[in-house]
Image 1: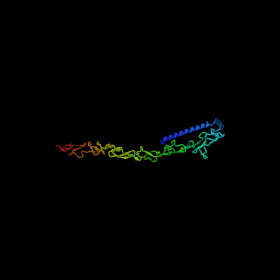
Image 2 (image 1 turned 90 degrees about the vertical axis):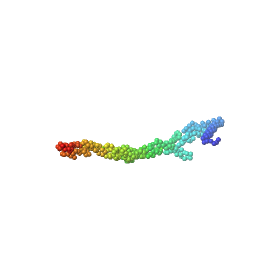
Image 3 (image 1 turned 45 degrees about the horizontal axis):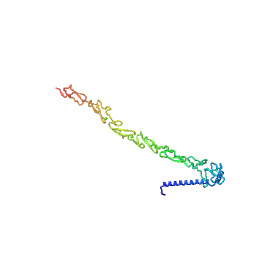
Image 4 (image 1 turned 30 degrees about the vertical axis):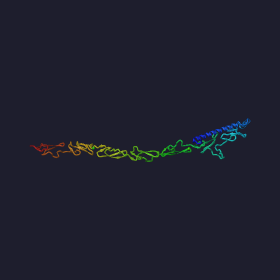
Length: 334
Ligand SMILES: [Ca+2]
Ligand SMILES: [Ca+2]
Ligand SMILES: [Ca+2]
Ligand SMILES: [Ca+2]
């Protein structure tokens, strides 16, 4: 029966304490009641008289209570309030420098530089704390970090003060100032520096450059914009060097070599890949630009003294002054 779990053992102990307390209380009451009812009526009357003699109204000052429980002298037996002592409760105890049991003067109960003054109510003294402390005895260092004053940092509580240990990139008493992390020339080629927390980034928008620091010239030839030519990368631009026969910004325009009208005298121009050609077949001119008049009589096609009349890519022989006829005056007239 003695072995049991810890819980039931604890309950048994509490029960035992309760029983003992009740027994003691009953015994005390019995003792008082026995005392009051002890002896003869004459003894009781004597006790009452003694009490009346010992306790006159006002014998105990400062709220002291007269309690003639064990009267042995004529002095009033006073039960004094905590702040007073002496036979009639007139000696004010000094709670600001009360003496300890050994007789040594105890220091003021007010800690951390608080100023002590005696008062009329419990706890019979008051501590006026220096800034930064609170509590009955100024024992509490007020948490100056409670309001979270360090916006971007760690707070250390001090006396009526605090200090902030700022996170990287922040500064100022309350770590609320964003340190400028953009060094001069941080971003190249006109990039805009954006301040961060202990670092920076570059905004290269509209600069024609890319990369962490806008150091990379974006390849504007990547999309192969030159249809018929070689591309050269520039800043936010490109240039095309066109192959023969092409022109325009993107070399996509076929050069029209006939545009200047190179064929003369009614020659028909044909545009080619690198030059033009003139069709002179229907006009009486020849060479590359139809500029040379064709003399169809140059080969003297009319015989026997016939007169040659130059035509358009043809000739006519006038044989009238001869004795010959035929297209070339080649036949004798019989
Ligand atoms: Ca503090
Ligand atoms: Ca910054
Ligand atoms: Ca570029
Ligand atoms: Ca052409």
